[in-house]
Length: 446
Image 1 (spheres, rainbow, N blue to C red):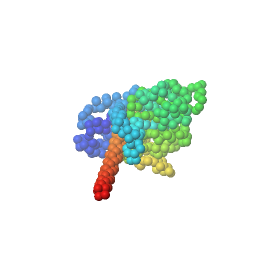
Image 2 (cartoon, rainbow, N blue to C red; image 1 turned 60 degrees about the horizontal axis):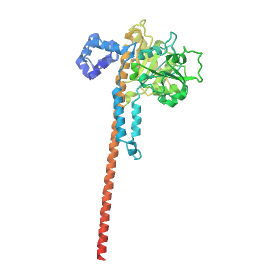
Image 3 (tube, rainbow, N blue to C red; image 1 turned 90 degrees about the vertical axis):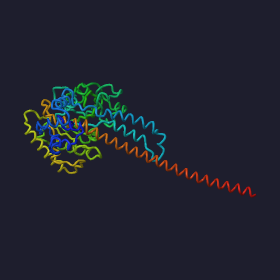
Image 4 (cartoon, rainbow, N blue to C red; image 1 turned 30 degrees about the vertical axis):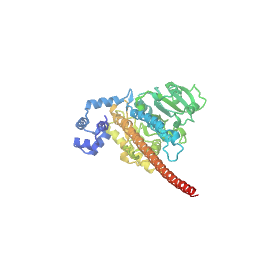
């Protein structure tokens, strides 16, 4: 269950809740991160202080973590999208382009429209891992859909770019497009670009035939496949787009599509079936993630928890492991990853990692054992439904305030210019009147 969400829903700070429960603020923070460590009686009092009870909290969490339907973070951007449409209409009415475009220093409607397009983009979740790391099981956990239904190993051979079915453009009537290696993920919405890269289209069978190791080799494509565009009806995609990368080592570091995918990602999920036996590919992958992971907690007013957009997932946390054994595996894995990141020369990361912080970002997963998925689901829901929308709203608020200030400054300067011109014109008029008066006097004297 999600203790943090219960607290935030009623607007309590950690300090305020700690006072009500007669515990320290640090204890509240620790139990929000590790729900399983919280004593049962404290959980009951916690939920009561937040206006709910244990049965309701369990029911809500079970609904959110329905393995049949995937995670359900709600529609956190629905109101924002509506507001952005109103803002766009407003700027087209109040700030027509022709009135300001040619005036130096004027607020630029085109710049604001570009920001509006950027704000409409949901955060991107990037899922990666080695061969047989459990990526497809994690993808099914998120989406509630088996992308490549097969009894065989479900290994991706193409980067998969996945959005909600509601966002499917009219020019892409099929749910799956297989594209060639020239596809640029930044131009996903560009009809001409996607049509030029298109090799074949269809349904999920097309994805199975050309995007996994269980492909149908009897079907030949005119060019090598490089990516798959996919639209599915999944609740989690109301809050994010999803990229599922080929297994670590399937593509080289020079792969353009892969590099762009890393740059597009806001949230990284790295799957590993054996965190107790990490290999060089795991370490190299973690180094790549460390280099590209956005340092969103440093952004002004984002209030984003440190490293909350990183999830390292042990996907083989079956009932053969005790909770104590899994705790030791997490600790050893964090120690080894931290040591590698620290010792790797030239690791130009945006983040400051610590061993304890890395350990807090390692999660367990096993689709048949709900308790092993609880913390992963709770924190993913928290990031997707609370922290990412809050980050975006902070950006929107900051930019709109700056745009308003620029506009006020511009029109204030325009007013000052008008006043100076008016004073100058009055001065010229007085001078002209004096000249005319002198001329009239001189003519009278003549």
